[in-house]
Length: 113
Ligand SMILES: Cc1cc2nc3c(=O)[nH]c(=O)nc-3n(C[C@H](O)[C@H](O)[C@H](O)COP(=O)(O)OP(=O)(O)OC[C@H]3O[C@@H](n4cnc5c(N)ncnc54)[C@H](O)[C@@H]3O)c2cc1C
Image (cartoon, rainbow, N blue to C red; front, side, top):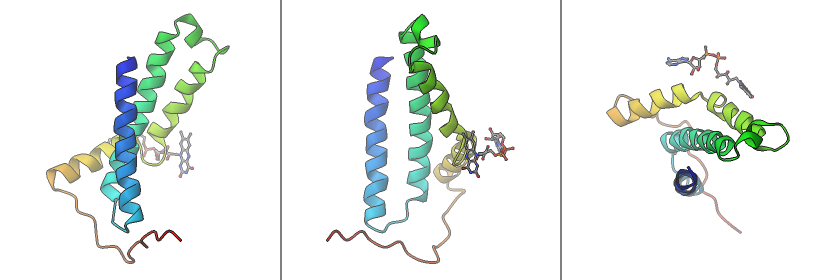
């Protein structure tokens, strides 16, 4: 369980940095940000879920923050596009059924001072 938490943490960082890099370079990142959100939301929930088990009975009690982490990590699976909707999007991208429409305006590239 700990190994999965550590692995998912690294995967999420890479997905997040990829999106950040694309955004900073003014590239469209609709597919990538959807994948990142979907993966990170699941990873956070899995980590909190396993943490409840690792902490034994304390994980289930309100005395420790672990149960709150479980509750809090459930919400991102629902908001900003549910897991199911992001799953459909990702499957459509992967199968070539979905293509992003051209943007009306291009995103500005980040230019540090
Ligand atoms: C803590 C929290 C905060 C929120 N904050 C906001 C907010 O700030 N702004 C906002 O607008 N909304 C917010 N929401 C609402 C959230 O975005 C919606 O609950 C979510 O988009 C689901 O839409 P819905 O309620 O219309 O249900 P539905 O669209 O009916 O979805 C219900 C379930 O059916 C699934 N589903 C729907 N269509 C499909 C499909 N084609 N295939 C498979 N499964 C499908 C969904 O994934 C979901 O599990 C929040 C929700 C929570 C829990």
